[in-house]
Structures are given as C-alpha cells and as structure tokens.
Image (cartoon, rainbow, N blue to C red; front, side, top):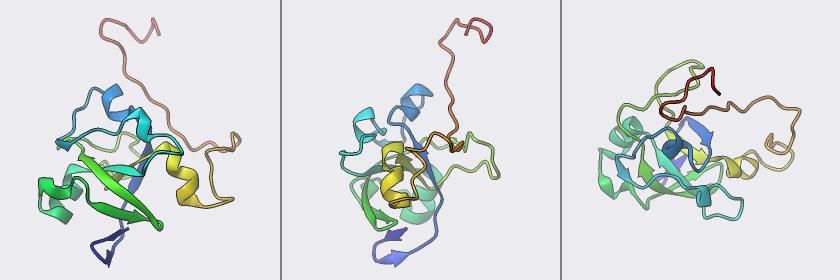
Length: 140
C-alpha cells in the first residue's frame, strides 16, 4: 500500500459489495461497501478495518475520502469496519485485514493473466451467508 507518500505492507481481503450488510454489520465511520462498488466500472472504493484505522490514522473520522494506493490502483476510503469485526476465514490470524476490497477489482489488482476471478478451475473464493431469523440450517 502507498498512503500519504509512504509505502507500507498491509493485508487485504476481497469481499462482495453486500458483505457487511449481509452479515448484519454496520460500519463505525462512513458507509459500507455497496453492490454498486462491486462492479468492474465502479470507482475504486475500500473499507478499512477498525484496528488499521486506529493504528494508521489515529481514529480520525477524516479518513473517509482519503486515497490509498494498492498495487498502483488508487482507492478511496469509504468507511471503517466495526470495532470487533475479525477475519471470518480463520486462515491464520483472526485479526481483520487492513482493507476490504470489492471483489470486482481482483483482476485489476492481480494484473493481466494473474486474475483468478474469471477462471472457474481455481478454488480460492470462500462463500458464506447468514441464516434468516427463524430459519434453521436443516431447512436450508
């Protein structure tokens, strides 16, 4: 990542535009990623984790609208994830990734020939959902 003229390592996770709303989570600051953000023609938008917000930006709500460059692509910060949100994939650390990137941007960030999104033979995407209230796993 490149922030305020400074390069730094960061962790990221590709998510769908309805990721936070489908999980019933509400952002701490700004707005959630939206389905409109998760299209190849959308303006690049990201949400950042609460811990990254506090660590890197001192908890300043003015982070909304700030530009973060990821793999030479400029993204606008649209919101901050809830404080207690963690990595739901449980692959290693349970700390939330620093940035949440709309899934549609995966081809642009990985570069030509490196994208996994358009290759169904690659098994890399974790799909999850939330049960509707009153519906059991057996019913699903």
